[in-house]
Image 1 (cartoon, rainbow, N blue to C red):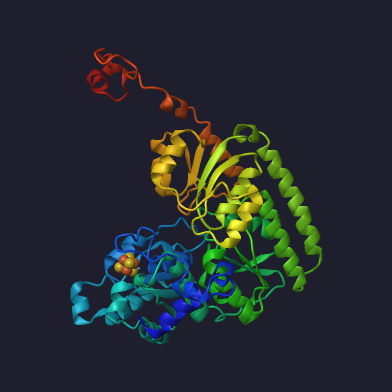
Image 2: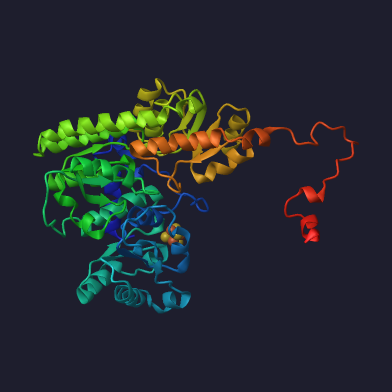
Length: 487
Ligand code: SF4
């Protein structure tokens, strides 16, 4: 690993904006905030994967992975970030290095040719080149290749030097975003900078969640000038330095970027969430107050209050018929980071009982918020083994599991409904409109009559062992042989 990369990693672990980090003793801090991967246990993703998913939602960029085929094959399109324009970001480009390329030292030449080809074929706004374990270990200098290609082809070609072996996916998120600060932010100027321009950092427009927020901002005359990286264009990253305020949606990985934008360009930031009615209103209020502090017209505050009153009333009216269907039901929440508190708060607004919430990837700030919302920490847990989760669900201590895809089969085995609230989900749950969608999803899953049938004993259960099974009439089974025999 190069000295520059080592230094970058150390700096990521020394982030002064991170309260968790700052509270650690010096020796602890050097070890970093994520557990090191053990061989064979990289299911959570490597650092390259982290950098990739942080930046891939930048839609008009060609993302070129300099690696043997498998790196991109493992990581391609693993997050449902939506685009309102270019679909280029969803195409997979890789140099597909072979053993022969590696032995013959062809890596850098192949990369240069790949950049030339992708620019000729796709005309991207920029090319991002990702280093991976193999190409970093053989010493390919992607920085030099990117520089030469950018000069030759007159297009930004950005090195993202975060090979998988340097650490966890979370570290990769941070280093990927750092690459934007090093090479992209500040390289373009907006045609008309405005007093109500903002950056949104840490939202990835999963299933189109940003589009549930954008109409609210449009009504207030607030423009998303910079985005990292939901539905972002390259230019939006390049112009982030001209925003007036930054909203940090997921503090864990990107706090250093927000803090550095503040230090370098004087852009203040705040941490907020768009999950739940009260959190959405709080985020809008904070955003408007900070914009007014920085010179936006003071009437923005009144317009913000009017919008909040209007949206809250509309949302509560939409939720009224749904509330009795979910009120008093119990949810086990197995997610991470800021969602631990933002989803808890959203559910509690509806009278849903949260019987447990995981604190995986949560910061001390996240923990404090959960304690504040839930009253104490008795329902917080770090990690729950699938066996324990299965037991809890089977004993009906929760009516529904809300988690990421990896736990869905535990719920289904326990015959308990499951709702996807992680990055792979297919439905957007942000803002006021998202809250209504979330409650609809809970109602749809929990009150589906299928569950009663599924939990009822099978016809043969409880019969004496020597009772002959009732014959199944083939004609009663749709699509059975009997059906075809009649044809
Ligand atoms: S970068 Fe390394 S750890 Fe990540 S997918 Fe490629 S080979 Fe595996």
